[in-house]
Length: 272
Image (cartoon, rainbow, N blue to C red; front, side, top):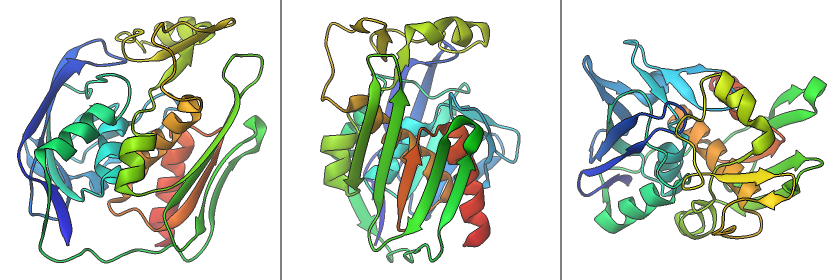
């Protein structure tokens, strides 16, 4: 069966990078796929053109509509296996909320998730797909697997974040309880670069984990020890949503980012 939500849900808040207040609504749909409501009608997420940037997920729809920082909302849909919905956004950037997909995922679960129609055809990846960035010791890959699994490694030498690894078999329960709560994070040493490039204007300790050379600045602390690397899994799931239906595979990210995630999506589209 295809899956959608039972009622419209609205989220409002500040955009992480723009600093602007925006509202995004997610509506039930019995038209298979994730669609964006624009002035030119409903446009499928799969038609989006990714704008490569290792810092944020931005894409442009065929009519020129720009959507930024969509990864947390899309991760919540994918993580809960919601494959049919319409997204309506005021402004260009989806609200960051608490910095994780959890507020989206919790709202979807509470309003109710319903099944309709026939079950979409399962897509399995039959060949390995690998994207390498050897100059920066980064890579992202998708390997044939009988189950959907994500493994991620991050390495921030000389910082309190350090090296972290996390791996999960993805299911709605695992996503909601163990993955979706992980918040975005950053280093104070990166702030000047971000500000000079017009990013992180809406960032605060209310919606991001921030580390300096001595440790975590957020008084609330981490939600769990591997929160930083687990957030990267959220980002990857959200970026993979641009495939429409995520092929069953083992996805492995090694010090990757949104730019490599986007290249993986493009490569997978070519091999399916």
